[in-house]
Amino acid sequence: MARVSKHQAGAGSNLIFLYGPPASGKSTLGELLADNLALPFVDLDQRIEVETNLTIPEIFAKEGEEGFRRLEKTLLKETLNLGWGVVALGGGALLDPESRSLVEQAGAVICLAPSPEELLERAGTTSTERPLIADSSQENASSEKLIDLLNRRESHYASFAHPVDSISKSPEEVVWEIQIQLGAFHLRGMANSGFRAPAAGGDSARPHPLGYDVRVSNGALGEVGIWLEQLELKGPIALVTDENVAPFYLSRTLEFIQEAGFTVQPVVIPPGEAAKSIDTVSYLWGQFLEMGLERRGTAIALGGGVVGDLAGFAAATYKRGVRWVNLPTTLLAMVDASLGGKTGADLPQGKNLVGAFHAPQLVLTDPETLDTLPQEELRSGIAEVIKAGIIGDATLFERCTQGWQEIESNLGELIRRAMAVKVEVIEADPYEGGVRESLNLGHTIGHAVEVVSNYELRHGEAVAIGTVAEARLSEKIGVAENGLADQIEIVCSQIGLPVEIPEELSADEIIKAIQMDKKLAAGRVRFSLPVKIGEVQTGIEVEDLNLIRL
Image (cartoon, one colour):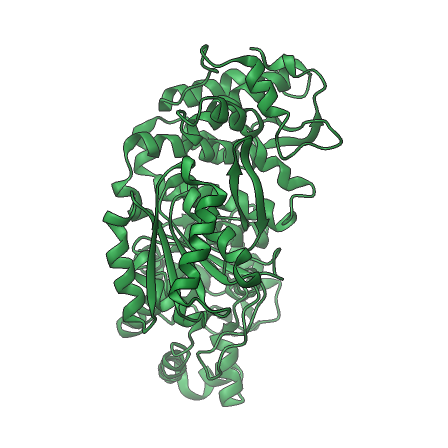
């Protein structure tokens, strides 16, 4: 098992510490995690050996454990000066209360705790010498010494909360579970539009990876200014929000950005899908010009999916592209619209018919902003969470079957898991050339229903209807396993989402809207249809659209 310290650092902190007993895999997992997040990796034991020109066993033999701990603490404090990185700690580095306090203030701590059998097997199959568990006569791991050490440190290791199951999983799978627990991702797929200039230099400077960071953390909104500094984004800054979000979060977000020394100008637009038009984009362009937004300046979207799509599209096209940051404040935006760099606007004929791929520099998600979201909007957002579970996470789907009270109690985990599904898909196919089409599940019919309802249906409500309808279509043409549509319908109904196309909506108009879908290829509509929970098949052409008349 791996546990994340309950004293997690804020969103602006980018130090992650791996901790646990000897042979628990800290170095192996740390390198993988650092690579996934485009962060530098530090193995504290290796750094000690480099500094002293001695091996760990030699230091123990010369200085004893007490002398080793003094040296370890000194170099640990130096390591805390790093602004970015994944750090593998020695198995007893946080036994000292001061060291633990300093580390937990500096970043998130992951405590790895495989079973004693796994630890002994790993210790016996590596060349690494571990003086605290080695048998002095054989110079290899001793089961008695290991078990004794684990017994003595049991309460210490157990004090690090939030387990990540590592049993019978590959290192890659364990690292991915750690990322989900942390709410930390890095997308490289759209690297050309997410290029980050080299940092200015110094120990705290991060290398200049391609791509962009995604972070989920309670209180993250308060760290936006720190992130802007760390990513070396430039002002002036245009902070775009809508009339619904502004009363709750505009003034404090302006304050957070100004405290970091940036010049920032708010731009407030009307709320809702009706505002998602070229006229609004033109208004944003005009505001950018009026405030003097430069080519090296930054736009920030603060709000739901409409705000993100419009601000991102304006950023993509203003002066041939300026950098932007997404601060989603709705559940729909957090788990779906904020990820992937899709930006755009609607035309009268349909949704998202104009737009551009333009990756943000950062997606910073603060679940606490959902506290001001109306219940009906929160329920609407769960439709995208259910969709993510159907596409690629059966565990996530199962979580959604447990009723609304459980969903609300575990909303943070559901957000992180749903985002992880989309991140994996986007990384595999950044420009929707194949597998990314799976994210369109429920949207081909859902968008059409949304348009024909004149947007009286919320987006999530339309997606719920579309997902059930497409599951029934999938069963009709022999793609889905029998009973799948009923399974999805039950989950959506329990949450309070609509599951049937309203009778007052014309089926002919819905079919006409589907035929205007942007996913049309060679004059035919391409559906992404569910096969079973956790699997979707893309690129399915349905010649007879009358099959949707359910």
